[in-house]
Structure formats: structure tokens, C-alpha cells
Length: 365
Image (tube, rainbow, N blue to C red):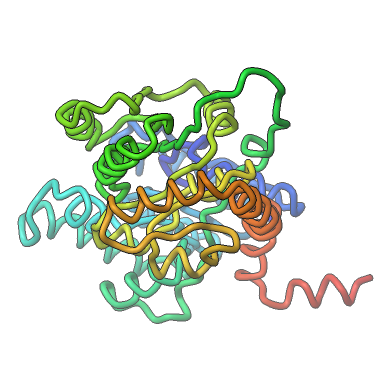
């Protein structure tokens, strides 16, 4: 089988690189039909007709990767022209992200209606839509009127080439470190983590909180930490490729999402899978999406609202319980390496496209 990844996508974005690597490990050839994301979408069509034709013609499946909603009509043209199956992996809807989560425009505004229309069109054209959780699948079906059999769940997963256990080195003990890393989106709830740092600091000043990354809520979160006069919080910007796993390796606990937006309840982000891939215990908010994959006290530690109080209590509880931290890390790693690594996700995507694939393979042996 041959895939053509088509659109103005970022090849190093985690979802993208994980899927391409996973398909490669499962014997699938992946052709690149890519234009730089800086090219405006109305220019992608004349450029794309010349650039993408050969790759689309030679493929069995055309896959439009994450965030390339505006490229779906062009991909549909190629899929009809060459009788190829079209799959779209949106990761998130534009309206859901820009209007509901980021609040860049008011619902009902011209921009809101424009983004909703782009979502509706891009989700209606493909033969198959991929959703990262059942909660997200339900959102797509309810909001855009999609039939359930048109949407399949394929978890985000992680890249086990980068995020893998690092042997513990002997030496001077480091401070107990709680790590948040990400793009500071509203759904991350970084302000609640700062609030938890203030509560933890009153009871155990030795616990350090480290924030890595940048984004929409970084400055308000920095100001909030300064207003609270926190001495146990450190901010660090984006890291060079390959540096993030080293920071994760030095953490005692990694944090997931603690936002209260609608989208926060529908997603399980890369950071959770990545931290588990490195055998780190993870604390995150209890949501229906998270509980699709993980179990509290077995491979993850879940907090109920209100935050930051419950998060602070969870951090202090795990700091005291060394055995539970170790067990969560080991069980989490065992689960994600088996079910959510590139080879596992590649197999799952192929089974989604061809449910009889495993049976065919067995009959040939």
C-alpha cells in the first residue's frame, strides 16, 4: 500500500511524524505531496496541481494531515481524478480551536461563520475522518452532522525514537521537579498549575515547578506567578530539537491539561503520551477523553475540579509515595509503548482502512 500525504503541512509536527514513521514500519510507502505552510491557500491550488499530481497518481490512499482543512478540496479533486481513497486527519476543528478555545472572535461573527464553513466543507468531502478520541469523534458528528461510520478514532500517540526511558545517573540529588511543557494554550490551564505551585510552596518549598514552552497564555501566567511572589517556579522558552526529552528525564512528575474549556475535555495531548514514553508519572485533569485510554491509580493520576487545590494535593501525595510514582511510570510506559507508539498506530490506521488486513496476513502464512 502507498500513501500520499498531501497539503501544506509541517513534516516535523509530532502527529505527522508519528504517522509517517508508523506507516513506514508497517511496510507502507509514504509519498510527500507538500507545499510550505507559508504559501497562501489560493496559491496552493495552481502550485499543487503541478506539484502533487505524480504523488497522488501513484498512491492508494491520499491523506491530508493535521490543520490542512483548506487543502481538502484540492485533495478531493485528486482522489476523484485518480479514484483514490481520501482520508483527513484534522486533529481539531478550526471553529473549535479559534473561536471556542482561543476566543479570537465571538461566535456568530463573520470570522466564526467562515471557520465553521471551512470545517463543514473539509469534513464533508473525505471518505474517512480521523479523530484522536471518541469524545472528539462525537463532537465532529454532532456539530457537523457526520455519520458515525465516517469517523474513526486514532489516538495521538508519541514518537518512541525521541521519548524513551533514560537511565538514572548517580550524582548530586536534584530538587523534586514538577514539569509542564507545551504551547500555553487555554486548554492547558497553566494558570491553574501556577496556583497549585503557590499552594504546594506553602507546605513543601523544596518542590520546584518548571514551565517549558511559549504561547497564548504565557505572559498572563508569568504575571500571575510574579503577583504571587513565587520562588519555586521557573520559566524556560522553546528548546532545540532533542533537548525536551532531557528535561523530561530530569523531572519527577509531568503534568497534562488543567484547562476548563470545552476542548480540554475532548483531547489527550502529545505531552501525556510523551512523558509516559519516558516512564514518568503523569498528573492530569479527569476527563472522558483521558479515561478512554488511561486508568487512575494504575497508569495515570487524575484530578477532579476544583483546580488548583486538587492538583496541589495530587503533587504532594505523589511526592510522598515513591512506589506509586514508580508504578505509574512503569505501567504508563508499558501501555503507551504497546498501544500508542508509531508501529502500533501504523497498524491501527491500516486496520481502520482495511478491517480484514490481519485476517489476510494470517491466511498467507
